[in-house]
Image (cartoon, rainbow, N blue to C red):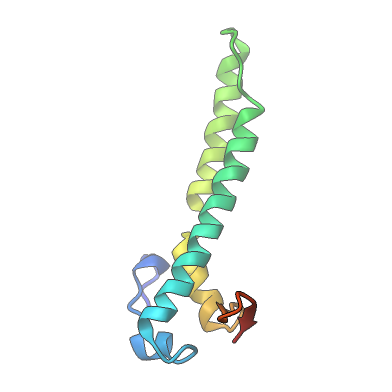
Length: 110
């Protein structure tokens, strides 16, 4: 039973369910970690791009209002689900796949 005030990032995960798609829990964690890094980098780039719109070298009274907007944007990104949680959900839903390189350097899917 999940308590309503418990964050999804602290749920206990079943290692057997994580290992099912790959047959190896460490390989599954590796796939999840790579996807989580992709998601984190995408979120960071989006946040930086939005905050860059407010970059100003001149201090004035309008900065107070811009600062409020920056704070709201930052709060929005703080409320987003953590990249690791999203990556785990995608992995367990079968939305992620992994590729291996064969001896000739070509990528193969599994």
